[in-house]
Length: 303
Image (cartoon, rainbow, N blue to C red):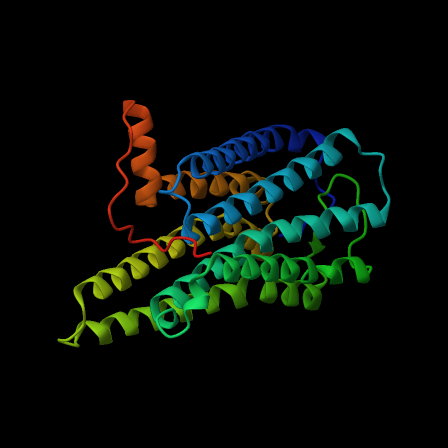
């Protein structure tokens, strides 16, 4: 995200867009909490590494939505707070929220790489412990990435604007976009290509065991779902980039709503795309007890 520095906004301009954006943020939080509850309550079917990482993404979404709501509260109800450091901290946590979600998808992709290609030789890569370490590395990384926001003085508190890196700080903005968006997305795409090539190469092997082939295709499908959800999430930035290019006031206001709207869409599609979660929800709606398959194709936690 980038900050509007044109000074062409009135407080009234934000009322409707902030209300809509907050509504979508609250819906996203509720759906994320629902994911936590349904995974926690459904034992052992959803107690898998895959669903641990889905819950991690849901937690990142909650963090981001809470930060967005807090920034809106400051914008509309605390306009007298003109402290630069306070503004920088709000920007810092906002960038943590953004990168937290994107890097959570990155470690989901790394997990698919471990399980699909390396877990046969290095079984510890598919364990519960390894993935908790991955999650810890992810959050340590996203805490470090936006530290430049606090160290530099590029972000200055401007009345009637949200706290982001301003568009006239091109070097700082470019570096931030590189580490928050570009690098993790490129790595995810590379992982997808690696797994796709591995599955294609395995399918040509006549001696390939049927169950192994099914498992690898399942991993590829899960990674496709990750890409779909990531693209939906990144769609929330399209209006922001358009504003970056055009500096049109209406596009900036649309971008504020678009961010939380796409987070809500991403959370809904998480429920729809995950077969196990979808089946559990259907069983709850129908009032039936879900049948746990004899062989779960999703890797379960190894102790």
